[in-house]
Length: 193
Image (cartoon, rainbow, N blue to C red; front, side):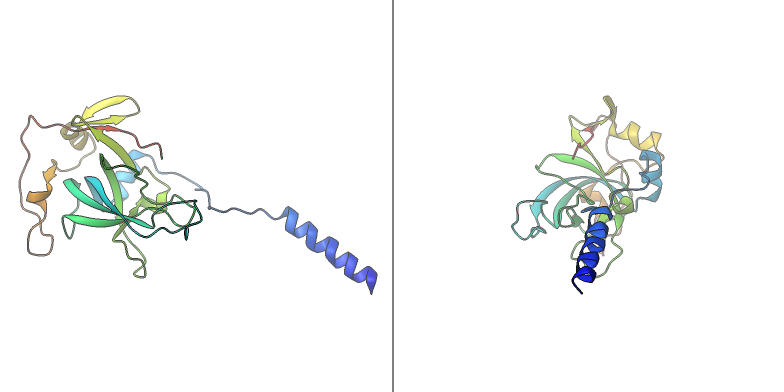
């Protein structure tokens, strides 16, 4: 009997040690910018205005389950309101949009799939894609190359940027047809988080 218990303990230890354990599932493939833009339901320039509840239960890893984002401009899609909730952390996994400041970011988003979540949008392909780029001085910074937001939109087949006040109306998020002036531009540095 003692030999059976020792044998079972050895076998159990072998499986415990040899089985791979991933706290966060790594992406098998990551979409490039063009692929991410095609799959995105909503592309905006926005600012984080609030954090949702922390998903780490106060343990110190991860961050907010979702962030509330004020939409400044829309390049693709239509938002239901001027502020939206976007998935951020899934416990200790950074699958969503991770923003730790109140600067403007270009965000590439998909409508949430689960109706059980309290956020409206998620990162494209559950974070296995391009997520966000910092926006400063009215230019998008893609790998060190600064591009005016309107040029970015034209290059990637997006609509001309629409100000949030023009994009969200009182009738459930229907957009108005408006363009911003040609002298306005946006700057972004890729978010390294």
